Each structure stands twice: as C-alpha cells, then as structure tokens.
Image (cartoon, helix red, strand yellow):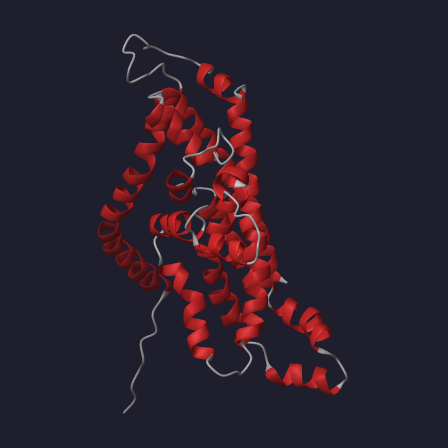
Length: 304
C-alpha cells in the first residue's frame, strides 16, 4: 500500500499568496487611509496658506500671495537669527548629551556601592515634562535672587548671574541637555553592557590602560549606539518649544528664538497665518534634509 504526498504546485502557491493578500488588504486599508489623511491634509493646508495673504486681524488681506510670504521670511533678519539659534541649540545639546552620556555610561558600568540608585537618579530627569523642567530651572535653580545656584555662588563670594538675561541661549541649552542626557545614558549604557568583557580583559592583560581601552575598544563599540542617539535626539531637538516659551519667550529680543518659536510668533502672536505657514514649509524642508543625511549615515554605519 503506497501513499502519495501532494506537493503544492506554483499555481496553488500563487493562489494562496493572493488569497492572503486579498484578506489582509481590506483590514489594513482603514489604517492606511487614516494615516494618509492625518499627515497629508495638514501638509496640504500649510502649503495652501503659505501662498495666501491671510491675517487674522486684517480681513482685507486676502488673495493669492505667490512667493511673497517666502520672500518676506527669507529676507527677515529674525529668520536667519532663529536658524542660527536652532543650529546652536541642536549642536550644543548633542555635544553635551553624547559626550556626557558616553562618560556616564562607562562610569555606571563599573561596580560601586549604590550603583542602582545612581542609575535611577540619572535617568529620572527624562520623565519630567519639559514645561515642569523649565519652570523648576527658572524659578528654583537659576533665579538671580533666591535660586539655589545663586545662593551657592553668594556662599563662595561670587556675584549671582542673571542667567536668562546675560546668557539666555546657553542657559536653554543647559536645560534641554539636562532633559535629554538620561536618554543618551540609557541607550549608551545598554550598548556598553553588551561589550564582551573578555575582550576588555584581554586588552588589560596586553598592557592597555583605561584610556587606551576606552578609545580603541569601548568607543568603537558605541559607534552605532551614538548614531541612534544623534538621530533620535536631532529629530526632537529641531522642535524645541516649551522650554523657550516658559523661560525666555524667545528673548531677550530674538536671542533664544529658534525656528519653531519663530513660526509660533508669526502665526499666533502676529496673527500672520500666511507667513507662519511659509515658515512651517521651510522648517519641513530643512527637517527632511537633515533626516535624509542622518538616515543615510546611520544606514552606512549599520553596514560596517
């Protein structure tokens, strides 16, 4: 008695794949449609208003504006100041968080008393809301009269500094860095813990010191993790807003006005919807350019 096993023919395989895709498509179609509406409709409306004369307090300003909104924005000195402030803010925070996060990750990988509590404390600021964090730093820590930092400076005979008037942009960079440093530590600490201890032990037996082991073993191992930190942080740092409006409101003057706050000021403070929409389109273009190069560099890093 012989038994035969039926093998699926190419026709049956194709029919099975077709039936599966035919069942799956109606299920994912609503989610795809909602996602497209959620992303495309605001973008189309922003593009439309960027080519219109539309001011909420002056209903006589109507009609097609062409590229007038873009020309006015690109020739405005405040735009270039806000763009420079955005680059300084993003670059400063990335420098502090990547360097500080790497050093803290290496430190917290060591075995010392209270390591669990120390890890918890260094990660805790990441769970504080940006508005609350800005209020704490403005009113509790850096207030020129009754702030904690001012009290410490007076205790050693140094005149307190009015941080938000004298060095406003650097102060905002410090606040944002304090918020994002735990994220960098969390990612980099995970990467450090995945490093093979036998490799470090072999380097130590060959006579490599702590500094040489860090630069030739630990740091190359953290290259991909650092790329992840830079890519994720840069996407969020381009839209920093809450810390600025709570602490300085973009001032003094435009000293702390970044691109996101400039768009807010144009659209909601000056009621110029057309100009604010033009700024939003420019911000979208710049963000996509940055994201393009980040993704390419990150993908190249993964291939190595």
